[in-house]
Image 1 (cartoon, rainbow, N blue to C red):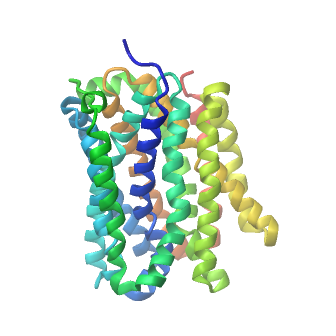
Image 2 (cartoon, helix red, strand yellow; image 1 turned 30 degrees about the vertical axis):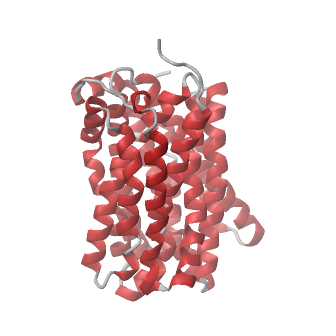
Image 3 (tube, rainbow, N blue to C red; image 1 turned 135 degrees about the vertical axis):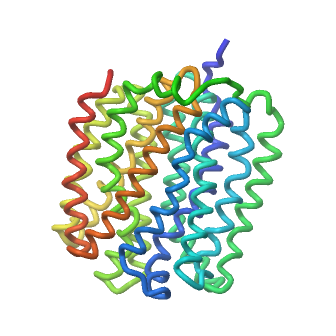
Length: 380
């Protein structure tokens, strides 16, 4: 019989690995102003860095198929933090733009290897409370993006750009801890199945198709706020630290949104929670652009709370509908999520170059409203 009990310890442990892993990928945004200046990049070139990091997401369904059929979810969760940390710790050492592209591409491969199987482990450990499990899991990721920008700047202050690579040691230690902790009961953390991409797609297509539309609309809001917020604030204030602080504040309330949304969706329903956050998010971004002072800060907080809170709800929907091949289903979802976001980052960079950063935020918010029709088509 399938274990329906919520396993707090195991869910928290995987969420902790999410925190460590994503902390390294969060280094790019706060360090982007330095990289832009050092390598004389345009905003389009800067946006392409995130796009290149997302390219390996094309492999997500195949990674999911491999993880399901071979039972390697635990191994991928253990190794990915180190594999991601190595290239992300070297980004300030890049002597050319092309070297930087190579580094973020290899980081992207590791990102894909981690994010496909980890939610499946969380769903397995969450029993009937998948919304709560996904909220805790995603809280780890969002918390890393809250603290990551500050940690990156602190590491830069203490280590300097030439020795920034030293930060990779934390991830290596984390992988060691995960290895010994998760290794104790491998038979309970392995997921051994036999399936195909086609069968998994047919199993979840009734929810995957409308969710793909929501992901596409949301991706522009996530791209503008998550990638270019620090650049926008730094150019407005002339302070790199203000840019990092704004990004940290945005991500901090993203943590609250992520934790709240999944938990509330267990009680109020997935569609209802998605409707409210998808309506409020673009309004908050528009208000952020057109206001100043304390009101602007409040709008930044609301934007963080709403823009980032949709992911655990959608992950819960996927896992509830993926009975036979959960890793493959999650791989398909993550492939679409990363793909549309990478395209959105590149396009928002172009909009920023052509029309200015302020207009880039406005366009992204307006596109965000187009998520609502797709939500209405979501199978209940």
